[in-house]
Image 1 (cartoon, rainbow, N blue to C red):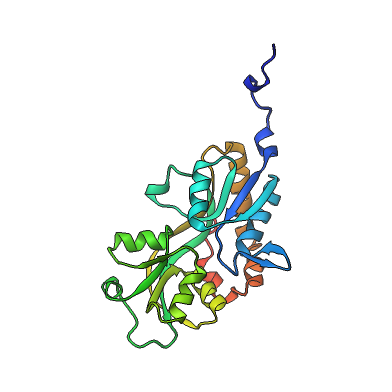
Image 2 (tube, rainbow, N blue to C red):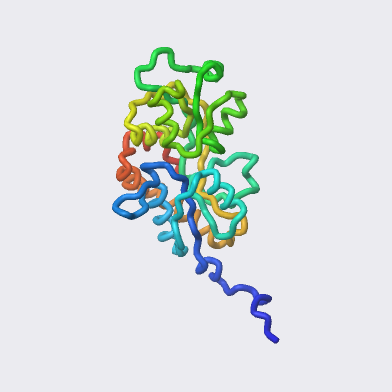
Length: 245
């Protein structure tokens, strides 16, 4: 009897199976508009898949913590924006950089005596999104913080005086403040790394290479900028664009 499951997959079969992209819930970069899921990370993922000629089965908005866990444990799952750290190195297939991960502390615009050092932050009530690079940075610095699930909650806490500062990736922090309708100042930069488009470790090497070429071409050709403009993030965006590969 012929056992089909024992036969090697034909060339391109894994690519034809497609990928599913999970995105964290972070308006306006991931948002519903006119009944359609859109925003910078959604449209960037669609553009990457299209240029790589890899079928995109779905873009699914889920809590960021769940997205990180599911991509690492899944098959054919990707995420457009994960900080590359030694602890995460074996968890994902690292495709290509999509963001300079500038981690900053934000305060209400015009706040008196904003924090200017890690020691200052240790004496403030601050908030951070759980399991992000900002969270890992605070843990490494032994800085206590209120932890939330979604980025947009950070600015809401600040607006309601529940905290005196929040720590977030620069672009996400600015976007969260706009979404909450609160003016903020960047008090200080806490750390910097690179954020990557990542996929499940089992992703086919040829597919990963096609995705990597697509990501690098998008940023080299400036095709990412109109996506950021559509979110209203033009002013902040140049600071967080990744280095050209």
